[in-house]
Image 1 (cartoon, rainbow, N blue to C red):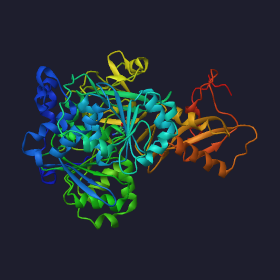
Image 2: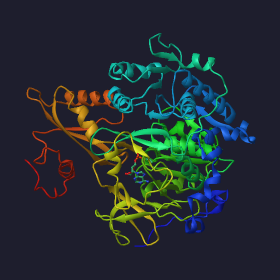
Image 3: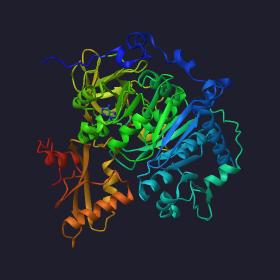
Image 4: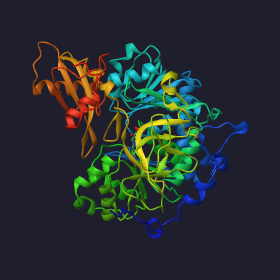
Length: 575
Ligand code: PRX
């Protein structure tokens, strides 16, 4: 069968691409691009300075950095305004006694204060931790407790979830509350009041490139989610990939739809894109096809970075809605987070005149690793080729490279600038990613003769639902806290729209009868405790769970049974 290829043209792209891939890839060295970012004396580097403050010394001072929109309001912030506001916030933190390497967490919707406080945290040299606002009390507690966070920034509504668990967080000294109606409580201060008092001048911490800048909790197969810690130096790769892969030019307006509670929302929704001096759009509200198209139209978005589930939902909403908007400002589209189906690329070519460019990376890698580039032909279904400076390979379980076309583990040669520097206080877990000379991504892929990488699936039980990474163990742990549940096994089941949906198999405690009402109650239990996106959409009550003789749940057997596939090697099965 002839391979389908989407060719591209300069006419559609409108601007000369920043990267000539074939030329650069041959001789690239990371040292060659260090001049792209700004170091202080003695090689010191602060990512927030690079993202915002350095532009204030140039004509970009009055360029709009942030176009913010909610369902009933909109605001604009220039680079100069963001610089002053984040200076003020850095002073607020300093006045509260926050020091270098302290963990300061943010639990906010996508409002301007989220972006201002993130930058302010980096400016004091503290480590910024972001949490998606859909997290419930136990998801929040796990993160704040593991990181021993000292300060939390939140709003009055979300604070209610923190109040439920605050007694379990002895390290949490202060909660900064954004908005009106800030309760007068010990250890609670008002964002607005503190910002009004704070000086607009701040002497930015001259951090070392290796000093930690931000951390994000993400899920694996086992245990609770882990704190992936990144260094200030990651800005180098975030900057260059925003330039090469997202093709940001001075005149571009970019909308990265990701929330800063996830890595894309930090690396490209804040650091890498602003480092390029780009204007960013942030929409606070939820997904809605008409609203999304209206934002693209209103802000003349030219670069759009989104995710497959959103694209599939737009496709499902129908083209009549799309046709009502003038989307001619778009010139380049990118996608990340889960497999991008060839039909989605086809749809965007037909309806928007432009293909989505898939790219691949992880919370751990800190920035884009494999990508489709502006003028490079797209093979729909492929994630593209490794970025210059990054070597990926397909290997067997022993780390031996496999021939072209063979499926195996997708691995990366360590040493790229934005690689995680630590799993918070968990060296064993960090070390487990590395075998021989490779970093193991946990994904399975193959590579074709032209060097394009094709995603196959996860090598472990990690679930990707609507692009969000969920660990089965975390969901199981909350499920067994429900009074009716004795045991729980959780898997991802393929879903046309969301990639995967979460399914739970539950063994009930004696005296409980299976019912639809109980299912609903259990779903709500997980939704309100762990996270709005991590509850099982589907529940089956069963008599026993397949387990190994040592008592480990065999999720692979649950999955095979669910999908009607061979159950594989069952020699360790206890049943
Ligand atoms: O399984 C891969 C999948 O998402 C995982 C990383 O998830 P997370 O750390 O949440 O970061 C997502 C955004 C950077 C990967 O291990 N994944 C990511 N991008 C793709 C993908 N799967 C298929 N195609 C992609 N383009």
